[in-house]
Image 1: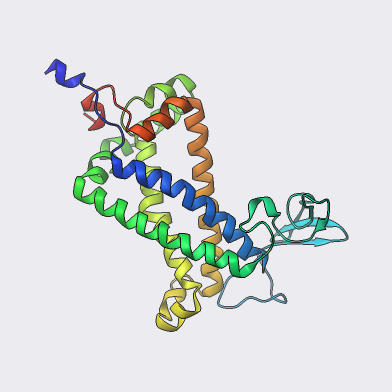
Image 2: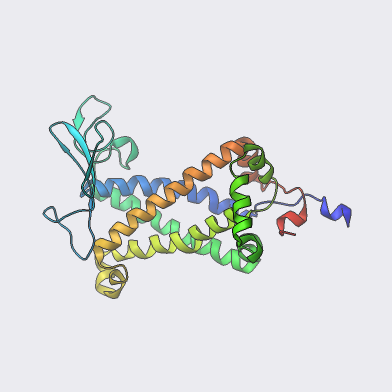
Length: 273
C-alpha cells in the first residue's frame, strides 16, 4: 500500500496535452484575426443594431494625431498603442489595433475573417473532442469537478492564501488540481467556451437567418458581439493568470510536464484522496 501511494503517475493525459497546445495556437490566431475584424468597426453596442451614429459603450478611435479609447463617458489617451500608432516603416496609422497584434499584419478584413473562421472550427472541434474524451475517461469528474468540501468559505480562503505564496504555488504544482484551479478550468470549459461559440454564431448572417432566436438569447446581434468581445477578454485574463502561475511554479518543469505528461508525487493526490 505504501509503494502504491508513492508510485508516480501522469499528471496530464494525452488528450489534455494535445488540447492544451492546439488551443494555445488556436486562441492566439483567433484573437489576432479577431482584432483585424474589429479594426473594421472598433465600437461596441447593446441591442440589435449599431452604426457610427449610435451610442457605443466602448470605442477606439483617433483625433488630431491622438489615439483615444472611450469606455462609456470616460476617455483615455492610447496614442502609440490603440487608435493612432506608427508602423514598422515609421508611417502613422489610425487603425484601432497595430499590425503587430493582428493577422494579417496589414488591414485585410477578408483575410482576417478567413483566418478567424478557419481556426474557429479547430477551436470548436478540439473542445468537443476534449469534452467527449473527458467524460468517457472520467477526467472531468475525477480531476476537475469540485468537491463540496473544497467549496466552503474556509477552504476557499485557504486556497487563496496559498496562491499568495510562491513556495506554496511550487508545491501545489506537484499535486492534483486544487479547488481554485478546478473552478477556473470548469468556468472556461463549460462556461466561457460555449458562450464564445454561441455568441460567435449569433454574429453570422447565415445563422441569423436559420436560427433567428439565437442572437435574441443575448439581447440582440450587437449585444452578442459585445459579449463575444468581453468573453475574449476574460479568456485572455485567464491565459495571463495561467502564465504567471506557471512562471512562479517553475516554467521549465511545467512546460516539459505538459509535453510529456509529467507526474504527481502520489496517486492519492491525483484523485484528491
